[in-house]
Image (cartoon, rainbow, N blue to C red; front, top):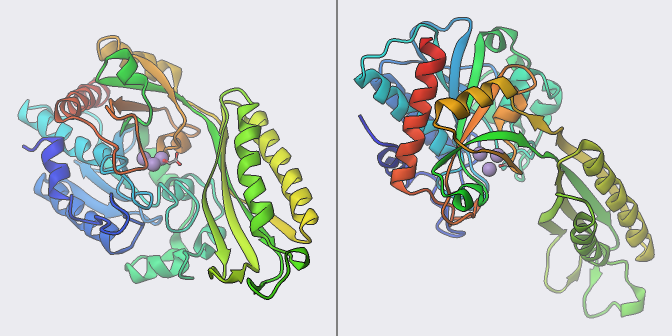
Length: 401
Ligand code: GLV
Ligand code: MN
Ligand code: MN
Ligand code: MN
């Protein structure tokens, strides 16, 4: 029997980012593969049957895989320089919850599985929740196979190097039909539980959200030899757009707009950039508001680019409509867990993708810093244990009843 915190300590060297701080664990890179191996070993030690599906997701079954299964899990990949909890906490808590159930002599009446989804953060190939989107048919497998990481390696090539068969990727009806209910435990990404002074909560909904790439092209040139009036510098419209995103989001109720990645090409101190790639992450409680925000920023990008003699190409890399978790399941869990608070979140999750296909729910564990996607993300060991206890209670209720 191990606690969630002990299991997290066992992996705190894998993918530790000595340059940026925190962890950089990207799907099918060395660190994420080591984490997969670690998970497989832990699952086998617990007598679980481990398989990798056609979409690079890992499954560990307690008993035979079968219909109406209760599935729990999360992901092991991270954002660049991310925290230790976003993803892994849900995976280790699943293992710890199974340990608790075993110790109590519980035998599931329905199949029970732990899943590790691939590329939840989209940190390598750009599309978040890639494994669950493929599983549910939410992304065209041809498009997924052709996605490339910053080094030019395609998702298909990465799968093949990891011994997987990319040609099999795509909607997996057999796997989908087996999932009776899905529950993802996750560190909270916000301050809701701090304010409520509660260790564990239940999710109500996820903001609609997406990612758009703006490629602004000008004319590369010499920083010293090119007079200020004779430039087509794509950094200028890009910079205006960063500010415009902040201002536009402030005007929409509950909206967020972020430019967290901006890459000038070729990226020399004494070079006027020839092009800039910048990624907009936009979210809001309503699909129409998110779409409206992006339309407004797209119009401004055209205008700012034209004013500097540049041009802009905009492509949508991913989108997910507002996800509402199954109301019956979430109320059932809130009651089961002693009137646990029910809260919305601005962060995307595989549970949000699955919610369109199967009853899904999420449990949140308090994060005392309120910070996530950064090394300061945290959960105290006693709150992690409260999370494991809540998850075990949930699994016992759903798989035993
Ligand atoms: C992933 O955590 C996201 O919400 O972007
Ligand atoms: Mn995340
Ligand atoms: Mn996550
Ligand atoms: Mn997420």
